[in-house]
Length: 374
Image 1 (cartoon, rainbow, N blue to C red):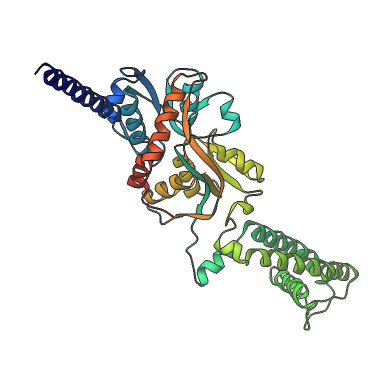
Image 2 (cartoon, rainbow, N blue to C red):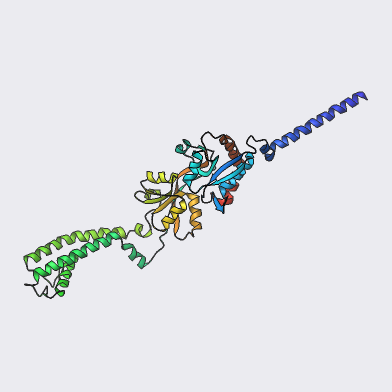
């Protein structure tokens, strides 16, 4: 009996040990249990946020959006709580992290070498690129074609020709009225009108069959208009050709290759501004992308460059009937979260971001706000 009791005791101890081991493994696999033991558990972080379409929006003072959902999940995994610090512009968002005013600037911010010099940036949250927004040209028909011809260059040229014709018409009438009353009647303004008619005929056809110039001054004026008419016709032809092209009717910016010499609205301090400048565009900076799109609607800029999905989201919010996104995505970037230089949070956040990528949480949040895309 003694040996049997001893055996039973050892078997019981083995069962208890196995049960305890299983419980400890179960706790290790439980994310909530892991959060409780996290070195940052219980920390309260100051997180800067600014309005960025689809990423961060505000309902009163409460932020929401794709990046808010991602941050809330990261905070849950790290066991930290959050005090959101609202910023008005993208520049203030970056400055807050650079100056150490906050623990995190949520962004997202494009990960570039220049920013890595002044900030710590986490692993990418998502990948995207820049795209262009332009005004839609929906006018069609005869009246739209006529309006497209009324360029300032053409109107200016017509005004100069008209002024010269009136001036030289007076000179021609004054020189010819006394000895050529049949072609240029001495009565004013009839004689001047006939002189201007002769000049117009000379420009277009090279002369006027029912009128002739006899005096030396009149012939000098006639010779000047005969020679000058050739140049005027060439100038009108070139201007009309330019204004009647498809680009003038449907818009001149179809993609990043068309940016040279064009005024392009960009968010202040964004990567879009540098990319547009590299392509020869004339950058006009605005506090937010929405401000740049408003300027585009008013014709203050010819295009807006910004992150692709943000542009599409904001144009849809604005009604989508006056602006449109054109061309391919260019200058792709990874977008991450910004921290002050030397932040102890970087490694912990990177680990949590990798976990979210591997278990599909990040993609589920992305699809919730942006839908599924190829």
